[in-house]
Image (cartoon, rainbow, N blue to C red):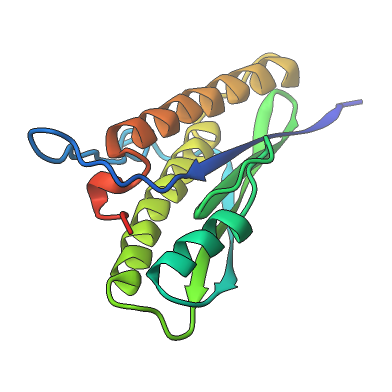
Length: 187
C-alpha cells in the first residue's frame, strides 16, 4: 500500500513604505523563474490568485496614516502598505510529486478619489508585488521539476529545500528593491 502525502509551505512577504532613495541611483533586480527553460515540470502545477484591496481616503497625509493604521498584517502582526503571501503545496505518491499547487494573495490599498501621485504609487507597488508572485511561481516550478525519489519523505525534503531557496530569493528581492522603493513604490 502506497502512502499519500500532502505537504505545504507558507510564507508572508511584507511590503514596507520606504521614502529613502539609494545613493548613486536605483538598483535593478530581476526575478527569475527558478527553473532552467529546458527543464519541463514533471508534476502538474496549478495557480490560484486572489486580489484584495482595503479602502482608504483623504489627503496624501491622511492616506499615509490610513495605510499605517489599516494596511494588511504580516505573519508577525506588523502592518504594511501592501502584502503578498504565497503558499506552495504538493502531493506525493510512490516517491514522485504528483501535483503542485500555488496559492497567491495580494493586498493593496484603494482610494476612490486619490490625490496626485497616489495612483502611480499603487501601480509601482503592484509591479513590485508581481515580482513576489513570480518568485512564488518559481518555487512551484522548482518543486514540480524535481525528479522521482525512493520515497515520499525524500521528495518532501527536496521540495521543502526548493521552496526555502525561493524564500531566500524573495528576501533578497526586497533588499535589492528596498521593498519596492527602487521600483517607484514611494509615496
